[in-house]
Image (cartoon, rainbow, N blue to C red; front, side, top):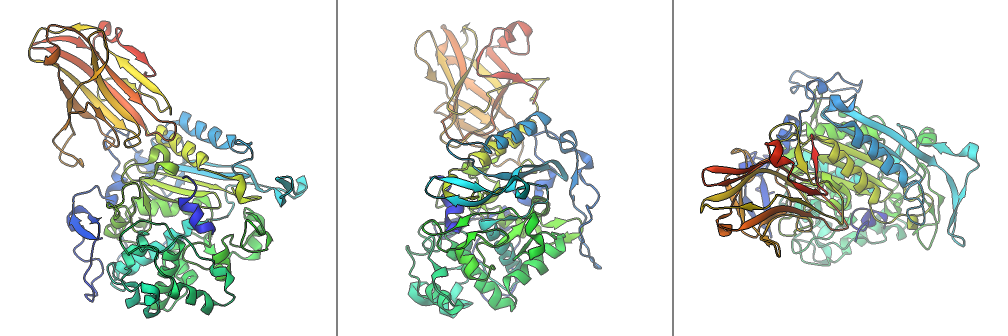
Length: 636
């Protein structure tokens, strides 16, 4: 059951006309498609196709990130697409990133090679981070192969002799586990784009046998967004024949009505595999090679790696009952997931092996809008659908077509409504943030020697937090702005001196930038006249018509939470209620103990009392009167 536990258990499009044969059709669809409880609504959303253009307020992406090809074999033809960035190694500065947080990213990951708290989270890992076309960090840590077995009686790993252990390397290949689902999803979206598969068609229209057990109304979209009603997992590996496994799937009764709930399930992507194989006449491993890995030059990505690869593959689990469904001993060079293993290693939900660089190529292709160099695997409009939330009816379970969105539990501070990715039970993760054009790959062997040693997603979160911090946020004006920091379980305050206001037209003005865990973490504006602090309502204005929420937005409760679009907002707060009183104003930033966003920034603080400016943070004397607890002046 490794596939299910991978993506949901680590912590606690629209309708398209059937029979048109026209693929996606009506591209853009008003900027995006949102699925609302099964109904469809058109809404303007940020598009992933614009990812390579960067985002205001995040610092420039170096111009030289449009770099030379790394040697991958790109497709050719008479009508080649416009060349987009390909990957090259480079410095943090070349990538438009800060070196300090990247160094801290490695230190954070290395901490989990030790007991955390009782056992190492992984035996080793390969870390890769970049922005634009520049890979600024590619670092192996720990061991690819360390343990020969697991001793259940003592809860210890039986290590290979030191000379037989294998250190992690940049090109170490990993069993990706459920990251495999992304490849199956991309293959499906390719078929949708070409008109061979329709998003709102029923699965049974392609696989008549699938209709058994009351599944006749499940659609392709529901498979891709985990809203089909399938339960998480069934032991297909217990059936010795392929026919028996398929019979189990055909007879499976949904746990909930299609479209009524979100439930992550391996069965969705296995079903999608069967559709793809039926409509193309090719097996999934052949489709993966022909449609994705060969065009992109991903030569270290495939199902069922050959025996010659074994010395460069990270080992996984000593697989034995009761924790494993099969008696296999040390799994090394073969797929870990029991159901995928029983499908001869080729399955829609698990089974793909790859290395960090190859996954970075895929990430770059998607952030480029579907093209890498001159080789295109998806149109920009199709990529938009991967980054579009189809699960608006299920808050907290945001999902594009195959890709998870806005999941702080492993994306950490990289998470935004447009951030896409996936995890794998073996200890793998891939995160793409179009708003900053960054990508993070963490490949660990966290079930080596046994799955019970790993819990949670702390290394994924820690590394994602540091990559998010590595993206500079330039002050709205001048050299520095006040920064809240990114500490969890904390309260940070930024307090102005006592000001006596005489005018009925007094107001606070400033620039504000925020990115917090939605709902859990808040940035509040408060006032006090010597007693308790009370909220101060305010209004923010986003910069320009291209922002997700243009125009003034009122915050009558006096606080903001969530994502501001990674851009500066102008803020104004009416202070007339404190006319004739000595009032103090403060910003209070609070976080819970779990996850954080990129934090908050405040700049250009001014208090106007009618025509007079009684406080201006740009004046050295006033700036020196600000009381900061937890906040720091930051240039980035």
